Length: 252
Image 1 (tube, rainbow, N blue to C red):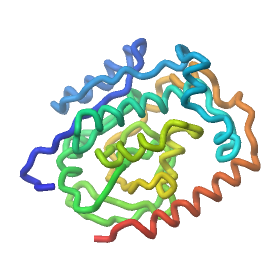
Image 2 (spheres, helix red, strand yellow):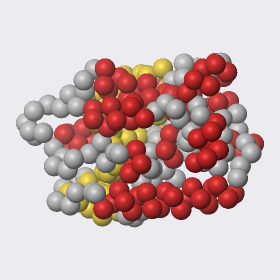
Image 3 (cartoon, rainbow, N blue to C red):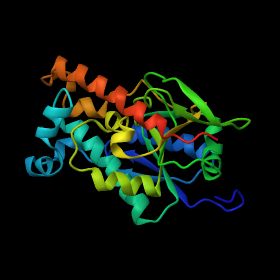
């Protein structure tokens, strides 16, 4: 993309209607950076009917490829991200920046859209946060302040902040639903999904690690029946999936 052409992008903030405190917290941060953004009404897991869940969630795939069946909150969270990806496609954006509402944003975030716009590498998905555990990476495109990286093993977990290209959103929408893993776990399977996942460091967004989970408020996933064997099998599969993805990552 020509660095002198303004990118066609939007910032979407996923927010439940009743989560007014979270909305105030995140909107104040974006306002202080003078960045335009759009609230995206999150799907409420408590409002999902059994028919709506059965239409998008596959128990068969969850039993085969994951170690427990998702809770209503996790299904709703995935559906909220699907709404954001659909907006990117419907509006023909170059990319969208998708944020959850329980985040802290640092001042360097203001540079993220233009830095993404001048990427030389092909990409579908860019991690802007590693809220739980960082993953080792290699720099493939260096800048004085923000650097494009590829991950050695797998992208970090967490879906609180990421950029999604038009091509990446289209690709993801062809594959999901059905859903059977949490959205942040699913997106670690970049080779299986056929998406090119990179990162932008230093990370400019983090979870607040303070707000109570809207997902757990619907149904606690720790109460779900889990399979230790399937969990181990899942981790091994993810390791080899990302080894294959890494072999296809461009080097500049």
